[in-house]
Length: 357
Image (cartoon, rainbow, N blue to C red):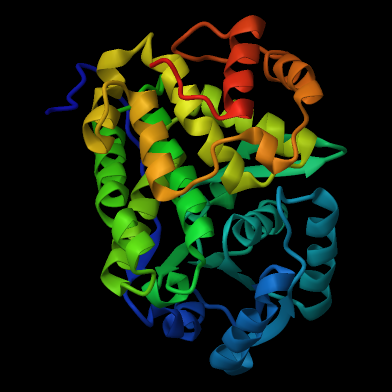
């Protein structure tokens, strides 16, 4: 099918992207290519050993390692990392990890304009966008700025081969959410829609193979390809209900990022499928179902993804406040956003019920 539109605007960032098993060993060369001499290597505490291995691999161009990246990019952590940037005189950043580490690199770059090299170890896709989400005083806010866009991305299938299957699945669904919402974005264009469909197809074909054999480097590579495409969609067009709900739940209730996206995805897409069934038809076709939301819910269950917000620690008593927060400020969405409608959506997601559409 064609995604041609009579009128549209498309914009792509200048990003260097390299794919291949072992491509992570090119980090030193990439630092040199962008003119870097003193790189600060970033990771979470859990991936500190990996960050140290990168520092050893990079050699004299590694000026320091910061291993304090954490979920939802707290401003306090960013300020701590910037203090180290200034102390060591870092002239570029190397982020090794998932959305938490990428978010920290972006937050530093936003304040310092340092160039970024990102080596993803999950499928979050944040590395392909100029979008930064930060949390301060219990509120998560987002901004979009060219300074936030990483200059170099290295996708190495070997780095994600050891990612546990449950994390693989939730991270993949997080990426799929970018593409699914991109199909009905107000500012969608033929390129963003084509990328969204190709990205979802890559996940639909490769993720079951990864679940069956986590060490399959070809399947891992294809899922990284899907993550790049879905992330590129996120960087090109605006998001709507799904991302608003996930930011609310993550920033205000401290729910884990990828798991929250995985659970909310079928419900948010199902909520909007009634309003834009034609735009979401590719989702139902790719994942196999009567409607987009139901297809995603069935695929999630088949992949063993979490389906209940209750299992993430959210209390049923929190649903009213979550609905209030999610409808506090008006935002565009293809289906009307009402407090009752969102409360019903959250209730279904809390109990793990299948969406109606």
